[in-house]
Each structure stands twice: as C-alpha cells, then as structure tokens.
Length: 253
Ligand SMILES: [Zn+2]
Image (tube, rainbow, N blue to C red; front, side, top):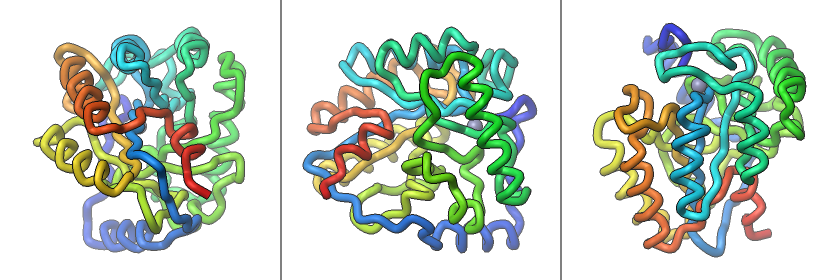
C-alpha cells in the first residue's frame, strides 16, 4: 500500500496484460517438498508487523519475511507508521528475512523494466545504508504488478519473486512470480483454511501476505488473534513455517 492506497488499473487491457504476464513463466521450475510449507510475508512494512507480527511468529517457533520498501521507511501510510532502521537489525537478529519490495513502491506494470531495475538497486543500497546486513534474496512486486520483460530481467541475486495471485506453489511453478494469498479481505480465513488443507495433501508451499498486525488492523492488515489461529492450524496440519528464502532451500532436487 502507499500513502494514498493506490490501486492498479482494472480495465480490460490491463486485465488482459496481467493474465498474459502471469501465464508467461520467466523462471520455470518444478517445486517438490517433503512436507507442506507456509511462509508469512509482510509488505512495505508497518512497525506493527515487525513488533506484533514477529512476536506471533516467534511464539510458534517460526520466522517471517519482511518485504521492505526503503522509500516508505518512517512514513505514515494507510496501514500505520512504517519501519525504521532499528526494525531491520532487530528482525535479522531474531532470524527473520528482509526481502525487497522496490524502493519507491510504484506499479511495476506501468513503467519500464529498466526503471524498476534502477529502483531495485536503489532499494538494495538504501536498506544497506539502514543497516541491513545482506542484500535481499527475494522480491515481492508492489500490488503484485509486473511485466514479462521485468520477470525476464530480474537480477540473479533474487532467488524468487512473489506476486499476489492466489494458488499453491507446487509442481510446475514460476519462480519469477510465485502465488500468494492475502491474509486480509473478505473471507480470507475461509480461503486459507481450504488452501492449507489442499496444500497439506500435496505437500505444497503456501505463501501468505499482509501489512499491519494489530488487535484491530487496517483493511489490508491481519489481527493478532487471526494470525495466531492461522499458524496454529498450519502446525496442526504438519506445516513447517519458514521465511521465503528458507522455504526455497527445502526444495527437493
Ligand atoms: Zn506493498
């Protein structure tokens, strides 16, 4: 989310292009795992994700992925105040992953791949200047928006990129646009309950994404109790709960 809660165009041409982009696997891969995996990711990211979100994960012995946009750092957005340098080092010290969410949080489908590549480098340098100990190895596209050209030209330092199209990550996959489920919105708990049951049978990788984590979250956030209930359900079904980069390490060769 941005300060103004931008939403990408929904006209026919944009939808057609989005569908073609999703269908084009720029980094085709076959994903197989020995057990089902759940990754929880926090986009932008608000202070409450670093504080309450991390506490909920850690209470389950789990860690998450924080997709940071350095250009949003210390700004007030629709999901609350965003992170500062201290949150990066505290999260890393506790074993969480810092991923890249671009510097400026622009719609990557509405600018050239070259502009986005410059922006990704800017985010890497800005996060390093804020004390992030290593360059991000995974990426999440703001609003889930990307292009075939961008997917094809992602720097090799990114092991994978995440979109926002729901689905299980197993079997034939595109590491340049992994599926993910929103942990907010209408009936998200029902959707996740169903997805986790299917994923448990298929030993699939489920990625969830959210923003703020509060007792009473924004429309783009998750409540503390519902996040806790989701993790409880996943662990009861035999899921490993891992940051995105560690989930990739669990791929069967
Ligand atoms: Zn975002």
